[in-house]
Image 1: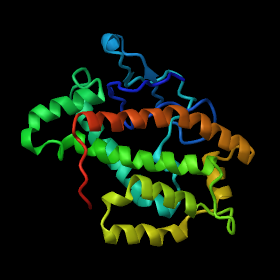
Image 2 (image 1 turned 90 degrees about the vertical axis):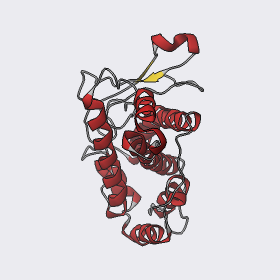
Image 3 (image 1 turned 90 degrees about the horizontal axis):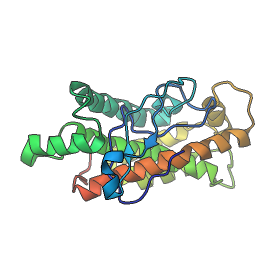
Image 4 (image 1 turned 45 degrees about the vertical axis):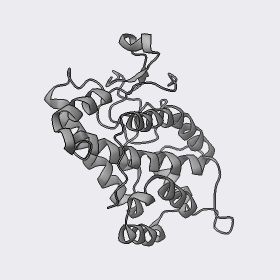
Length: 239
């Protein structure tokens, strides 16, 4: 795994701008992306999240299908929809839009006063929030946070993730919908089994793979958030 330093620029990672998992059955395999050093920006001490499909398709990358419970359906739909919007922009000119920062810079000039509430810039803003939800949720499970009276429920973990990543951007109605959906949340044991994709692994083995995954995943999301702050692209309106 490659470290991501503070104060770096962010570059385009096709689809979800995610770092790779170590080899293992957790999450649905798609394409694998990794953080690599951006030689062109080395004089600015910056690194990049580059669209780099790994030749080894057997290694896994996170995908919203790992969130199988109905409680996650709106988040899954939002993540998938925003990935599609960003990829559509990227596909128009992969060389021009090699990095996430390239996309934001081009759209800022293209849309003028409408930016950042437009285009792939807006899609990535909401995408990073959905990805943050997943990150906080998985980290909370790995940290052993739970309801001591109902230790096999994941409502505590999902609630923490929602409050940290999404709640302040949602109006009263959307918040109530999420709270109601929490009652459909799966048991932790069932959720971890689903992540293992039918493989015969222990709960601790599954959690260890998640911990390894979270190293690069968290760093990448942090860098995207930092980019939005530095470019003054963050919006706080509610839906």
